[in-house]
Structure formats: C-alpha cells, structure tokens
Length: 327
Ligand code: FO1
Image 1 (cartoon, rainbow, N blue to C red):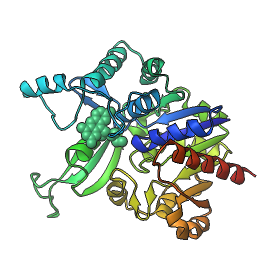
Image 2: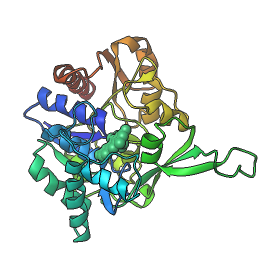
Image 3: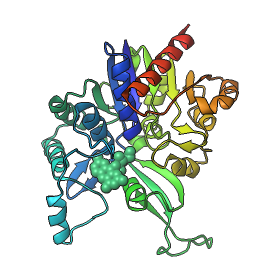
C-alpha cells in the first residue's frame, strides 16, 4: 500500500516508527515540515527532517526526541567561549556534521530535496523523506516583548521571533499572538510531493503539531488542494488528549490561532474538506459525536504512543478507519 504521511517533529517521527511496524510492506512517503528550519552559525538546520531521519535511522536521542544519541558539545562550548551565540539552541558535535554536509551541498547548488535524499542514503530511514518544499520557509511567532516599545494602540510591545526562539528560548511561555510561515505563499511543493499524493492509497496526519507542523505543510500552495482532490481516504490522529497536547506545547500555538485545545477542535481546524476520518483517544470518546457532526468519521482508540507496539496499534486503527471511509 502507498501511504503518504505529513510529519512534523517528535510526534510525527514516533508515529512513523509505529506505522512501519504496523504495515511493513507499505511504501511510505513522508512530507516533512521545513518551517522550523533555522540558519545558525552559517549552517542550515532542519529540525523536523532530522528528527524523522534520526528516529527512523536509529540515531535519535530517544529521551529528547531530537538531536543525536551519544552527543558531545565541544563545538558549542568553543562557540560560547568566543561569545558567539545563540547558546539557547543545543547543537551537538555529531549533529553539526549533518548541518555542515547539508549547507555544503546547498552551497554547491543542490536543492533541499536532493540533500535530504543524500543524508538519508546514510541513515536508511525506511521511508522516502521529502521536504514540503525546496524553497525557504521559516515560521515566525508574534510575541509580547516587554523590551519593545508599546504599540500605538497602547498594547504591550510585540516582536516577531523565529519559531525556535519562541519554542526553545522562551519555552512557549510568552503570549503568542500570531504564527506566520514566512515564505510559504511563494513556496512550491518539492519535487515528488504532488506525485506522491496523487499516487497514494491513503494520506495520514500523525499526532504532530496541527499549526506549526501539519498546518505549515498545508500552507504550501498546492499541497492542501492535492490532498483534498486525491480522492483517497485522509485520516488524522489527534495530538490532543483530554484537552491538553500529549507532548510539546501545541496548546500555546493553537491558542495563538484561535483553536481550542480539544480533539474535536483540531479536527475542525483541518476541516471536513480535508479530513475523512479522525482518531481521538478513548478518554475523548465523548467528543466523537461532535467530530461526526462536522462530517468527519470518528473512532475513539488508545492514542498514547508509549512504545512501538502501542504506536503500531494506533497506526493499524488509522489504516482500518481509512478502509472504512473508503468503503
Ligand atoms: N529543542 C529544545 O527544546 N532545545 C534545544 O536546545 C533544541 C535543539 C535542537 C537542535 C537540533 C534539532 O534538530 C532540534 C532541536 N530542538 C531543541 C528541537 C526543536 O526545537 C523541535 O524539534 C522542533 O523544531 C519542533 O518540532
């Protein structure tokens, strides 16, 4: 079976590990979010692509869900000794090699999609990993900034910061008023993205952040339309359980775009024009009616990715719901 998965960072990568276990014979294409990408020390860092590549390739720092296992930080320490920041983004020595190879290949003229394919030749993730676009897209967040001058309307000072500064430096603890995937509206789907969607038997939205991960991928013109028009089941898994995100701080960015942190609200955020089916956690079985009323088939199953077996069971449920919707 040909499966296309729109993946962000940690949640998406962990789901993919379960999907591979649940459907070993399937041909899985991952459309990876690149809105989290950041340029640091002259290098291009692609957190969500690297999290998928390392998680499925066996190099991930399991406890963090990002970065490499067995890391050292000599380069980071030396940069700090020179007073060269930022210090709040933890790049390890092994991880630096990935960014050096990527930046070198981009400087030589290779598009991000070719670079990602080359990096994956080493890691063998067992899926085809495509960036959502080869064009530059960076998610910025409008936050309250006590240092910034108050706005003309007397509102507290506000500043747009790179998503990573909001997410890592501020731990999403400052009020966010807008989330903007800068560059998305001029971006084109990367080579192979639309073809993979057109050839898919099913499209899955894993429990990734619906705003900054899946939402950013859908913001690239042509991708949302291709999925909506593909005529195949589109099934998502809620990243929110019992009114709170399972991991990360998705509720903060959901609030910034005016979406309530509930499984049903996230389903509506994607919309019935896109989603055919939606899995909510067993504890949210009560909201299934609300999701079905929005025109989206809904099933309540255990959604905690506690280990690969649990995640594989979720993936099987998603594929089963897809078959039910297809019928
Ligand atoms: N997340 C953190 O919370 N702290 C970090 O210092 C950090 C460094 C980092 C370095 C490379 C990388 O690929 C990811 C990194 N992340 C870090 C995670 C990153 O912010 C998130 O994985 C995504 O951007 C959100 O999904």
